[in-house]
Length: 152
Image (cartoon, rainbow, N blue to C red; front, side, top):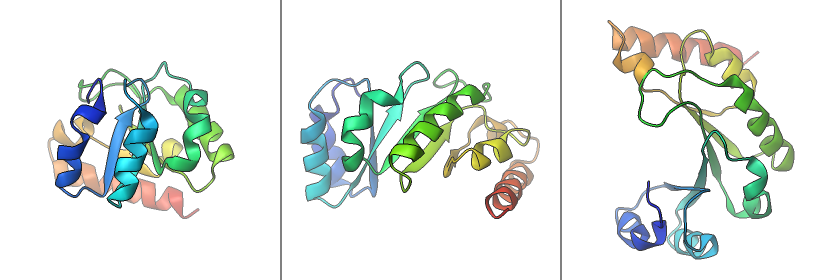
């Protein structure tokens, strides 16, 4: 997470990532970031903090491949998922149905189906797996629930 991603973007792109995610709240020129990513065939994502409304990126959605919804406090593994933020997912999917949506924060076996059903495509899970007595079992549980939800 960089205040001004354009200062480090060239170095990041030199590592040939498939996706770069910048914060909607970041400084710098978004169009320049987009151009640098596009020129190197790198997808561009935008992260939204809990308090940031998705309308702030609405005019740029044509340039955005992925939106990451942050729920809870950054860096606090095992936090709470604020499911009211699913409204952002709904808004973004209405504007751009093919947009890939990620979620980071508070994912567990009690809310994963609601997140998937609510339109989340990518689940960024930390604490639920890392804090589990059996991380492999925790992962498999989430995977099974998400897979079952996504196919019904």
